[in-house]
Length: 431
Image (cartoon, rainbow, N blue to C red):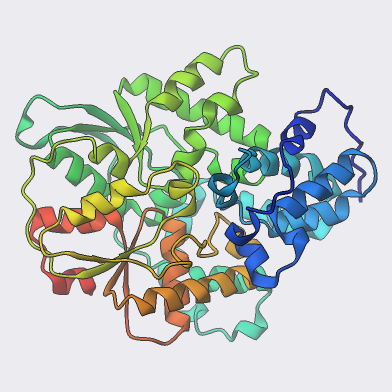
């Protein structure tokens, strides 16, 4: 394994970030991996301690790499910390720092994942084979598959019709638009969740907005950013900024929590780039989650009754990363006859185990968290689980299928609002 040099005191940003930790322990009960086994090194405080040892040259990169890889990056520790430790920045910088210590087999596995998932065209090519082979693949005995392939097989999304969403969508009735909204369609979202993007467009245009979907956009860099691949994340950030700057939009919305969290951090990501820093800052200031943006508009489109019981799951990068908690719930409560039920206390804030590609790289830990979340959702008595992130929806769908309970629909929050605007029957929503 390659070595990682100790950092020079006073010049290393990782040292300054970790020095803010006073080891109070408030992060421990908030951390899902610490909750799984109670091991100190699997907590934010423990990982920061290991990083300090690494920076002082008192420990090698191997243990740090292993425990950083076990971190979900769910950010639950950030709002729990009374000292304001920027653990989100710590884990991103640290992952880039210890990457050279990764073994060959691990590098190859990760290279395969990152050669596929941030590339919408490559993902789109898979749609045909998955439509044909997906049902067959699900019948392969899990013991015959490597862990990552087994996890991918378990999480395969249904291949639904893919609506075309690129281009300009005028507001309903061709009225003067209340706002010109740019929509990120991203990578996994564009290949397998384009129906959610289409629902976002229908809702926004019904609410009097014009929607622009730039055809040249791609991955926003979130998967790279959350895994410490900062050079790749910066490259994709520049391309995303350019695509939307050319579109001339007032605001940029996303229906993916992880994407929104990263795009709101473009100013920090590109702070050292003289050519892009100002553009990144202006772009980040315009980014909103779709529920966050809709909550600022006085609704003009009539809502029809939708008598279903819904449990709302907080996607980590929406609740912890962006602080968006009330807006999705407010939109759901605005749907007539929809009953919103809470997830039991102590479970609502716990990550479902998706965390980008964590459920592919750490399937055992992700499986435990998914099973825990599925049990909590069953306890609500809900008919529908709503969430604002496609990764969460895939993880929850698989976890709920594993527990062999009665069917429970998993839908994006916007799909429920779209169903209400369209007057869709509850039977069709639950199907």
